[in-house]
Amino acid sequence: MLRTRTGNHGSPAHAMRRVLLVVAGISLAAATAHTGVAHAGGESNGRQGTLGQVTGAVREHIESRSSPGGGAPTSPGGHGHWYGGNYDTHCPSCGPFVAASPVGGPSVRGPVEPVRVSLSLGLQSVEGSDAAVSGAAAVRMGGFALAIEGAQYFERVAGGAAGSDETIYMDIWSMRMAGRVLRLGAGELWIEGGMGGTGSSGFERVSGTVIGAAFVHAPGREISLRGGARYYVFEHDLQATEAHADFGVSFLSVGYRVLAFGVGPALHGPGLGVHAEF
Image 1 (cartoon, rainbow, N blue to C red):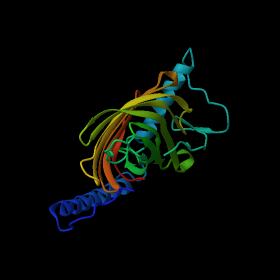
Image 2 (image 1 turned 90 degrees about the horizontal axis):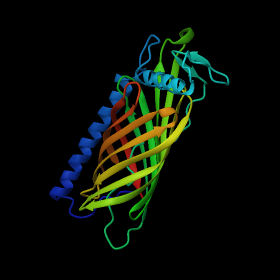
Image 3 (image 1 turned 135 degrees about the horizontal axis):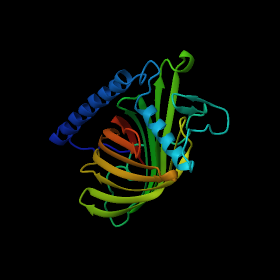
């Protein structure tokens, strides 16, 4: 767990940390209110929000690449039904929960760097939709790291088929290896690559590869700036780009995340999270 440094609690540095914690708390509360109030319920009267548009566009793209002659969509096998242009199998996506770069927390200086394990959980408000939950776990061994992370988006559509409410799900996940290529003071640049996948109640699950880069700047034990971008290449010529930037104080973080497929609108919005390092 990230620890608070001991020392003179009346010092200017300690006072600054307290101010930053208050600012982070206010930001977290504002983001929570934005998620729960401004985006509750997605679109009403059976109209889909941003997530519904994305899943519909991805499904049409996959079907157009899967069928040599194109044509009208065909229902996949199994039990389910069409709703709002999407095929709902009543099986919510079960991918892992995204929220952090492959390295969590400040770098450890010295001739030998100990093994570090970082965990994070996050909640994101999605513009024009409802929200997403995310999580990540990483093991860092010096300049090498292994990470797994993902996010699940959800959107409630009120007044849908037969007047009942419907919930649309979509997940995206990745398993990556990362290597540190540059260290400048408190900053580190990492490159990463591995495999990933995505699936939804509106389209079939697909998998592929992912490459990316991440930057971490940790000027103190309790303050960090993190950012990164990843590029996914899935089956059926489907691509996606994901980018994020986060500001962390102690175990709290606030940030902004964007996920854009090659089709449909982008899923983006502010988020809040908690993280720990052991």
